[in-house]
Image 1 (cartoon, rainbow, N blue to C red):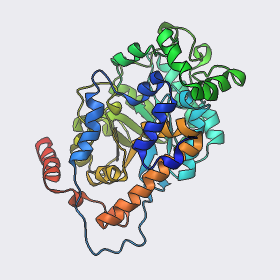
Image 2 (tube, rainbow, N blue to C red; image 1 turned 30 degrees about the horizontal axis):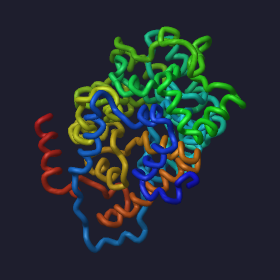
Image 3 (cartoon, rainbow, N blue to C red; image 1 turned 120 degrees about the vertical axis):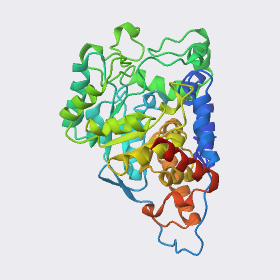
Image 4 (cartoon, rainbow, N blue to C red; image 1 turned 135 degrees about the horizontal axis):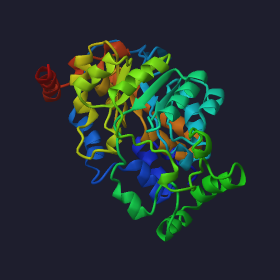
Length: 400
């Protein structure tokens, strides 16, 4: 069948092909949420409930999705979200994904727990690069990463604040999948039943660079994905993170600072007070609190409260060009997208990730024509239909 790109007509198709290629443990680690998968499913369902109206008799022959995000020009209001599994789906997967983003003209966000270093992404990827930070209990380790990202020229720092403790993901235990990677009999059988991944990813690592490592872990903690237990790794699940840490990051970081994982308007305002240039309305893709509100439902009140004083982004459930339009209409300046980029990378590395971005951009341009908004600034709340718009406005009124 090959890599499936020619048959993948949308992001759901890309996911289906990736599901066949990847071992179940790795696929579900990426695809699923937490506990009963309620939040991850609601992220998509919330988008489905929102309907758009159209402006007739509008010249859309010169439509463009180009805009700016955090001061950088982009081909469309989309960025690759930080994900820690790209190196598991393709050899040097973060670099492949970053290169695809650069070629497509959108930002790439490198995760703290990535398997490609900050410096290599800066040197080889090109494009606009952002860095996502987990603040460790030992703050000096995090500040060292901040310094490295600044020295490498990363344009923005995204600090994730919605993972104070390790989430409850029972399916990982059932699949025998864990990080550090220590497969039991069930997981070993799973790997053996996926020879394309086994030979194309893991075998290539073993005969070239060896087992992939967490390249941004400092010093002696830069372990491979199979080394040690959790007690050997400094915890990135920091349950004593406070607003003082955001103030300290503002003092240390010289460029755009964004707080990721905001679902309440008062937290968005507090982030701005602490010096943040932006917030990401996010429930971590439904991967942490399974009872969390969908970000698209939380977005209108936060965008209204921020009122242009900072950049508002959102992530969680973006799978179609129309989803991007809905997020912009409800107050976001852009969206981040995680899982689809990983699934595209799993199929064909940079080419697969670029295919995902090309699909999304084509859909977005089609929707812009259909709603009669030839440019991004023309998208407003008036294109949200009836009940969804009324509900969003009611949220804004009640939170004021």
